[in-house]
Length: 177
Image (tube, one colour):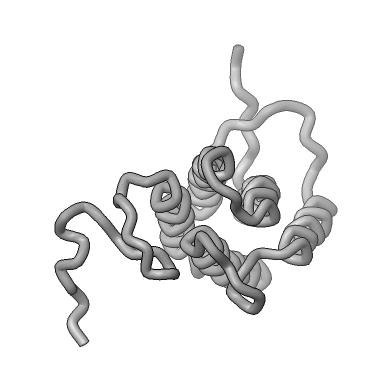
């Protein structure tokens, strides 16, 4: 099987149901940004922290589900879909890791170790993916749990960035106003 087909040469691509749409469509923009986020998270692994690496692997798998969810304009029962328990899982991780951290008293600059800074970067791409998903939801009906998942995941990535930086001995710098 060839990796290239030429089917996208005219600026269109297939959705899961084989509907042809513009590569510039809101739907493609939404799941393409999720794909970008997934690839960015892949650059962080391994972090040298097994628990964090396991969480990131889970997140990458969840993001594949988000992509499948967004690529499917007419889902059937049993199709891949983000569900409320995915959101709750991220909330549980945030709560677990938050216990390891000093309480926040101000905003912090997105910096730190290479891994911590990359997780801060992933958080910003996650926020963009969420904005793209919200734009799609204004045009078409989509799974609201997937939008909520991206919202919660950005908080989760922020928390993971803080944990990695704390474990790496990197200070959190507050912005100067």
